[in-house]
Image (cartoon, rainbow, N blue to C red):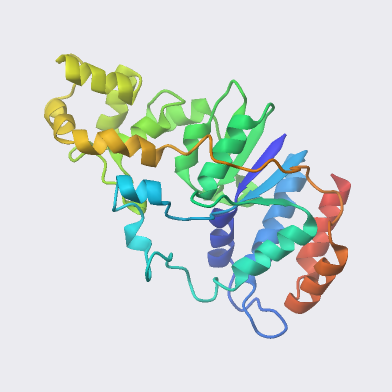
Length: 300
C-alpha cells in the first residue's frame, strides 16, 4: 500500500496544534517538526504502508493556475509571490526536509507544481491501493473505489482520521462519488480564491452535477438549449459564468501527469543517514519523537 502525505497540510496542522514553547536547545520553536515526526509514526503504525512519500509544495501558487484565475490563493500572498507563513514556522521547514532525507523517507516536490499535483500523479501511477493523508478537501477528487484510492482526512486528528471513499463523498455532498472536482468548480472555494459561479451554492451545485453527471455534460446541455433539470435561474447564472467555467477545471483539478521523478518509494526500515539523523536530533532536541518513529519503522 502506498501512503501519500500532504506534507504542508500536516506540518501546518502540527504547528497550530502544538505550542511554540516546544523548542530546540537553542530556543528555536520546533513544534511543527516534532509534531510531524509523531504524526508519521502514528500513520505508519496504524496503516503499515509498504511505500511512503512526503509530498511537498515546490510552488504553492503555480503560474498556470494564476494565469487562469488571478485570484487563486491571492489572499495568502505576503510579499512578491511568497506565501504568508508564520515567522516561527519558516525556519522549521528546512529542518523537516533534512529529517525526512536522513530518515530515507521519499520527499518529492516538482518545480511549478503543488503537493496536490505530486499526490495526484503518484496516485494515478500506482498499481495498488493508495491512501492520501490530508486536511484538504480538494484531494477528495482522487477518491476511486476501483483502485482503491482513499483520502484519510485529518479534520478530527491523526489518531481519528475520517476515511473518505466514494460513498462518503456521495453521502456528504449529494453527488456521484467521483465528481468532487466538478462540484467544487461550480461551488467555488474562498479559501483558495476560487469564486465559483455567482448565485450557485453548494446545494444547487450538487443538484446540477447529480442531474447531469459531470460539468462537461452540464455545459453541453446548457449549449444545446436543454431546460429540464436546471433549477430556476441556474441557466442564466451558468451562462454568465462561461469564461470562468472555461478555465476553472484546469485550476481545480489536480495534475495527474506532473513530471514526478521515478524514485524508490519504499517505506524505510532504518535511516538512510544515521549520523546525520543523530546530529539533527542533538541540535534540535528531537530524540524522543525520532526514537518513536525509528522504532515504528523497524517494527513495521
